[in-house]
Image (cartoon, rainbow, N blue to C red):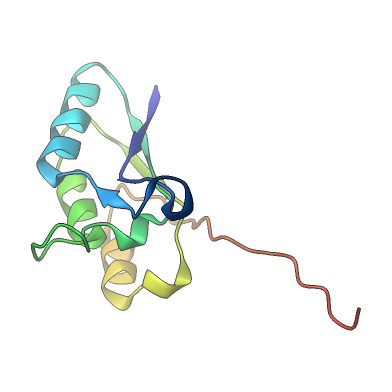
Length: 116
């Protein structure tokens, strides 16, 4: 079974700035899902890599992934959408060291027309 968990929410132009959920709320939700038998979760947000920047604590998306890795019963962690602007070396290192984070990335792209 798989579940989708919303991390940063709200589109700026529609509802205001992104807001990050408290890390402990996300972890508790994932622990509950794991107890119910869910094996895979997808963290979903407008830009998950910007997670935590609005929390006023020193806790970011890489920290969240480290803590989700510890949730017993979860086997796979996916996330989308990432933005290259916030995809830093620490996040890359956490993903590379993880046994649960799937090593694929969903990056936004826009078509470009040259010479029109």
